[in-house]
Length: 394
Picture 1 (cartoon, rainbow, N blue to C red):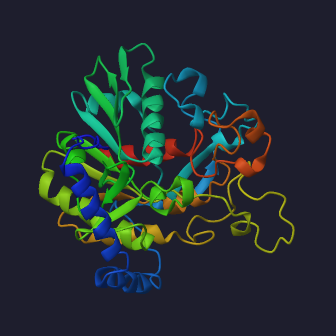
Picture 2: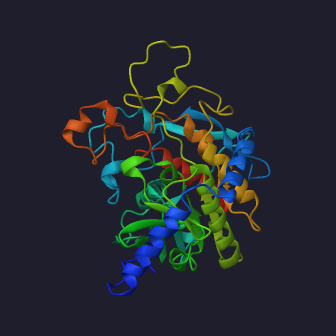
């Protein structure tokens, strides 16, 4: 079953379905008791402090400091054949390079140096699949580039598709895939309307079952408004809503995903990861405290990380991350949480800003169009993959 279903055939049933559908919408436009309950739940969550995760027994991988390191980056964008224009900052004119020269140093330890050959040998004959939105795609392409830099002469194969794209290192039998599913739950098309089904994974999951390593992510699409909103109606409990509390919707969708993983993934053969919420840097007030005049409205022109120890969160901690943390903790067999939110929050310098192939020349000349959500490659997602590598093999 595809991510977006085709419309049903025309005929006698179609008008009847449309009528029932519209009647259902009118009957259930108001918030149900379930929605009110979820909102109350999030009022409680709001007062909790962010959790600090130490997945390794002797090393808090996700708490630490950024240090300057001239041995970085692992690769150059010009030497990696698969970087999307929206991530390829150097190709689109980014003039500075210091943002490429930072290494993450966790408290009480150092990360093992990423070794692309070792990754291929350890994963020989296996499939690693990233599932989620464009931040998952950001990480997927980063990992390909990091490995490719270590074996530039090896035979490879790239197959782009929708929703599934794959990159294969043929000499090692290693497949790295990306499956686009921004909400992880089903997004269907019914009578030309996009229906986000919060209680259904279904067809999406058919492509995930046989991977040896799964890395999921979701987050940013749940908060999109206006023309960027990804649905026309949300389905929950057999009822349809044009909108609802976004955190409540995300929580319900994530619980559906978590239950699907617990029920359908054989954890004795498949490792499951979840990438934490990737922070944005649209608000300079979060890193210019005490400064009365801010020259930019977003991350445009930022060329250095936010100063700090890496133990206190700069700015407002993402409420979505509290939901992710809660849902994963409640799983029967919790996914490994790649808690990259804190360490990424310091990297206001790592975004494409106006150096993105997705922008027109007019937009690129106007910093108001800065992309402060995705990340340049090479760049921060390489660190996510250093942590991913550590979690996989150490």
